Image (cartoon, rainbow, N blue to C red):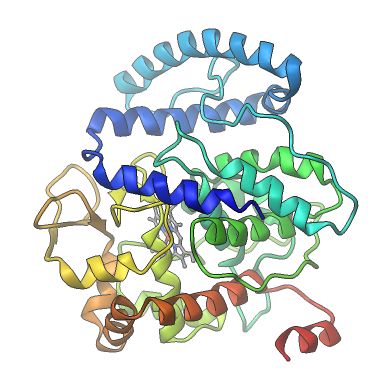
Length: 377
Ligand code: HEM
């Protein structure tokens, strides 16, 4: 794991904290860039991969010129139609890294994979300066489909590579994360996608200053989407405490786990073109901390007046947001008890989060039982 990354990312957060709230235009441009990257990656994955090495640099300059022209045209188009821009070669990948390809490794060298993931996290032109939050969301959505009663879903299989799962509304935006990890997969072809995506979540948490999360390999990739579960197993942000319990108890989590896992919303932001919601939960969205819980308890939250789904904004500045499901953690007495604890005690949050997140990433994975015993002893 790269040692300099956490410091850099924390610095990014600090700058973000000082920055003025992003204007609607910036937000729209940001979301346009995300769309363009995803669409371009879908349309021309080879071109994205070729963006490394000296040949890649020349192509990078060309891409910058043509991509810039195309971006302008497509941005205009997207403003005009309010629709995501169409895919095509002009929608260049302005947000994907253009650095050197990750170093290759021998099978089983997970430290090398971790290094490759770390090297991709920082990106000055993407969101708040890091792909970390997006990778955490990828790892979570790849795992959070699990149903303990039927033993279906979960992180095994990496089924989000296939339709319809890759097209679920809940997974919008995650094509960017999957594409981002392609060079890592190319450099370390021996690792499964299912292991890579979950490991990426762990590395991102750690590099953003969070706790170490126990992780072990062993997931396989299914060859097709035949084991994809029905849509609707991931949480719906417009609902309340009962829904959260239905969703997370189904996976095998308890109330404390629900609150601890929700603390991941200390990272990242909502994107209007992905979920329909907008904005960050904290002013330090690339640093893993207990700030989400502090903001929850220390602010007054009022419904945001806007042309979008119900979400809440802090009454003082109007720059932070909470989803209806986030506020359900305050209105439910049991959930609130844990929110108050985590707001005061970051160490307790880190400890509980690490255990719950590690468990989440293993849902549906048939590890050999002897190995499981070794991991828990
Ligand atoms: C409790 C139920 C949850 C709901 C309803 C929910 C909903 C959402 C929504 C609507 C977004 C915005 C997506 C976008 O517009 O880009 C989001 C982002 C995010 N979620 Fe959750 N989420 C939940 C739980 C979790 C859990 C358990 C984790 C991880 C342990 C997590 C990690 C994240 C992260 C890191 C982001 C930011 C992604 C980015 O910045 O691109 N969420 N979530």
